[in-house]
Length: 240
Image 1 (cartoon, rainbow, N blue to C red):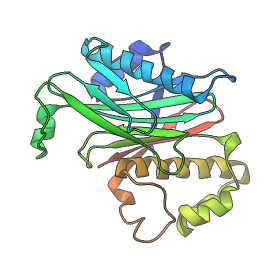
Image 2 (image 1 turned 90 degrees about the vertical axis):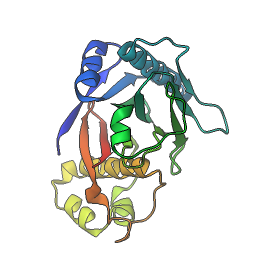
Image 3 (image 1 turned 45 degrees about the vertical axis):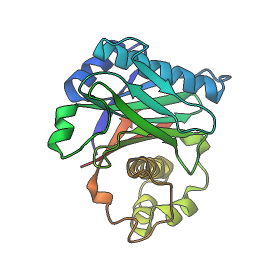
Image 4 (image 1 turned 180 degrees about the vertical axis):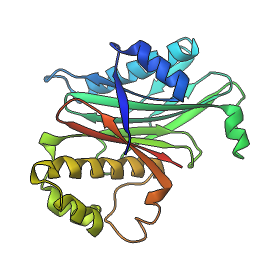
């Protein structure tokens, strides 16, 4: 599995903008003080996403609005001609990350998509992860074959991974984790778990127990491990 660079914002803003321009994909992170609230972290990450996209497309803050209201689906409205944005967000204590994928609207039309939006407006819907809405949020475009998902875990916060792996990751993955060096088993579990969560976000589904049918389309996704600070594990999933 390849490793994807995560750019600290705003310290590595120039490199993040270059990555987005060259690869149409970037993951950025913001660090949170130990005493910071979850809402503070969410606000700071939304500001980072807004600033990054504003710089990337030379748009104003009025053209780009990240919305999140209690009891309502959060979302991203982007008034930039000819562009689509897929966004996925994940939070953990001390760190928050956002993955952004872009493409021009003519690429979407080549894939047979049809939009009812006005030509100068792209809207990206979002919703909370059903398993843990306090930790993860994601926003994605309407094309199910073009979504992305990202997930972040802090190793110190993991539960008894053996039982969870058996229930949600299936027998093969559980056996593979058990076969690794005991000192690496928790990190190995965390990476597989992050892949599962990221894939669920791509699918727009909540977590469910492992079954042959639920595991059938695993190969339809490309996964990348995220290069994160020590103590964190994360993964990105993209439908291929």
